[in-house]
Each structure stands twice: as C-alpha cells, then as structure tokens.
Length: 277
Image (cartoon, rainbow, N blue to C red; front, side, top):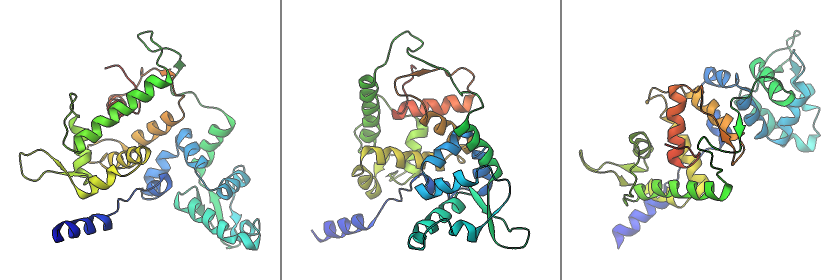
C-alpha cells in the first residue's frame, strides 16, 4: 500500500507541459518564425489567436512602414488597463510579430515584422493563390458527410489510445507515430527487443480531453521533426493551411511533394484528415 501511495504521489506531481499555439511558437528560433511568416495562412492563424488588444495594435500599425513610439502605443490604453497592454506587448514581441526598433531620435519604438506585415495583409485583404481547390466529392465520387468524418476521427484516435495502453488493435501504428509516443515519454521500452509500455506521463495523457490529447500529440510530433529529417516550416505551414479548410470538403493532393504526402498520411493515421489509402 505504501508503494502504491508513493507511486500515485509521484504521478500526481508529474504534469505534462501542454503549451498553447503561441507558447509553442515562442520556443522556436527567430529564423524559423520568420520563415513561417512567409506563409499568409500562418500569419492569419497567429493573428486570430492574439489577445484582443494585440490584434488591435497590429491593425493600427499594419500600414505604417516606420517604427511607432512605445510611449505612444502605451498612451492608446487607459492607465487602468496597462496590464492588458503589457500582455499584448509581451505576446507580440515573443512571437516576433513586432520588434524593438529605435526611432530616429533614439526613443524606443516598435515596428511590425516586415515579413509578417506583408503576408497578414495578403491574408486579410486578399491576394495570393489558394493552396488547393475544394470540391463536394472525393476522387471516388462519394460524399463524406460530417457524421462519417467524426466517426472516422474517433475510430482512428481510439487506435492510438489502444496502442498506448497495450491493447493492440487490428490496424498497427506506423513506426513514425509509435516513435512519437516513446520519444515524448508517454511510452517507454523496458528492455531491448520488448514492446513499449505506458508511463506515468502516458496515464496523465489519458486524463486529458480528446482535443487536448490531439494537440499535445501534435506538439510532440512537430518537436521530433528535426530528428526525422523533416522540414519543420513546411509541416507547420501545411498544418496552418489545413486549419482553414472546410470540414466535409474534398481537397486535391496533386502537386504536393513527398514530405507533404507523408505528413498527410500521418494526419490520416491520427484521424485529422480522411484520405483513401
């Protein structure tokens, strides 16, 4: 009984680090963020998750090509709301949406990231070209309604959870997906040549809501991109493009490169997209 209590105590103290979108992006190197901002879909995804005041700041300076005084920006907000101002400033700076840029006289200022500014303008005002064309039916001529897609997503995710708890289903996981479970610490291999088993972190993972489970898994998947020799910028930008797709619409995969097709196959395995084999 004492051993069980100690085990549960350690389990309760162990917490998964489940960052939100901005928290994850702020961990990325500046060069990666700037490359991501070359894609309008990424800029729009970042913009729509900003605090309300931060979105207001972006819209006020989006057409200004020179730095704005930090004191001037602070004056846009009542003194009683300076905590909201600090939150907005911290978020915009942490995401490199704007950067510290001194004014000609030396006063501190902020200037919108040029790459972000150009591409958020494309996303908000229009321009560029669609990444894929949507149709009502798939290549085989069948319409996939929302109820079908919901069931498909739930069934696919159940396969992941069954593998996690050691209940092997009829369809095995791919090596890449299984590696994410072990590299993330949700599973471990006790001895060489044995099957992976669930860890305390894995049990805590099971207590999360399904949406939190999927998001946490995707974070772990992205963090292993470099070890899999995969371009993180391409994967993230593709994921952001998918986030603006319409549920139930069919999209062509023509023109996708090998890396994108492999990523799409992994998303199919997770139930995030439906794709015929």
